Length: 226
Ligand SMILES: Nc1ncnc2c1ncn2[C@@H]1O[C@H](COP(=O)(O)OP(=O)(O)OP(=O)(O)O)[C@@H](O)[C@H]1O
Ligand SMILES: [Mg+2]
Image (cartoon, rainbow, N blue to C red; front, side, top):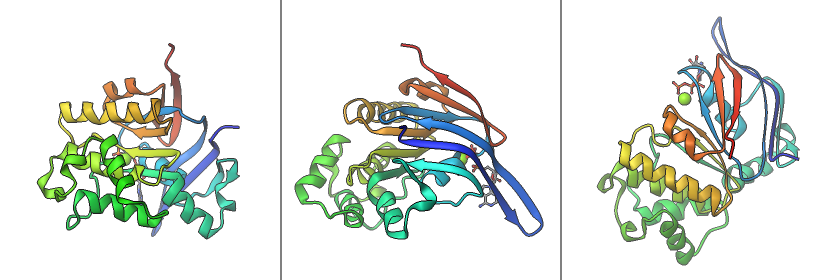
């Protein structure tokens, strides 16, 4: 059984009289420890797909199974646990709390799961290479460093699946490369399942599979031969 199973998924946004069909019948499976890139033009529904899969947005039709269970069958408390512990989300603009240090940002995220010890927070900062910056505030860090802290924050509850929406979209080339290496390590060493939206075709080479989206549909499911 795949870790995520999506079938005939549809979603529209309704504003006043306007209905925008954003996901128009999507089918695919995600196996444990897969690293999948999602590409496609602006407006093709990539972010919406990630939000729907992670339970941040509702959907209209079709089915989503996560860990063998229909997403709509999760109770509110099961959904809260799913979001805080089993799934991690990394955004393009990091979304760190500006008035908290590196250490505090990661610790705060653990409070939502089962609160972690100082050692566990430091071990997680070590994985992303940010231990030496534990007392820095976000404004004192480069974009790449802030993204590493955001990744540590996502890792602290040891999620099985990481969703990332253009995680290197705001970074320079070298910083982006470092973040991609980190995702590769998380996938290959820590066996995290990763679904990453990207506009950067080079970054798709870090994953094993690329879904191409167009107008709310998956038009190609490309598996790397190796
Ligand atoms: N909250 C919303 N209300 C109405 N329409 C929305 C909303 N969010 C997204 N849309 C529309 O849904 C479509 C898909 O948006 P989405 O953000 O998923 O695209 P995307 O592929 O992530 O694009 P980008 O590459 O620019 O991030 C767009 O036409 C967008 O205008
Ligand atoms: Mg988007």
